[in-house]
Amino acid sequence: MRRLHLLTTAAFAPPDGRGSPRSGPDPDSLLSEAQTCELTGLAPRTLQRKRLDGTGPRFAKLGRIVRYRRADVAAWIAANTHASTSAVTVAAQAAGSAA
Image (cartoon, rainbow, N blue to C red):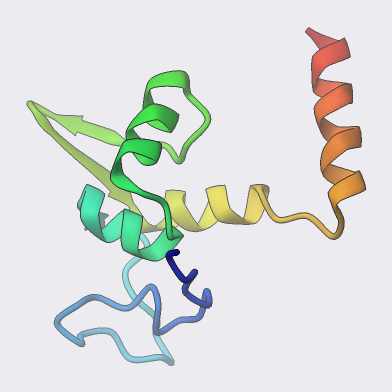
């Protein structure tokens, strides 16, 4: 089973070590699919399915290459953070009745 990474500044730091914790990593830097999977703990196929159905983080398609902006991944994680499982159920029901 995959272990989720704690979402700290270090988790979003560039792999080459640039970007101090004080300044943080560049929110506009582009992440590969593999890097995004590493940050989110999602399997590549799950991330691909979420990209297909529109439930994953926003992405950029550069020819055949898919990239994710660091800020979009962080925003997607924040938007999918809940205090309890009942809050998720209520939100899903509200979204279903709004459609």
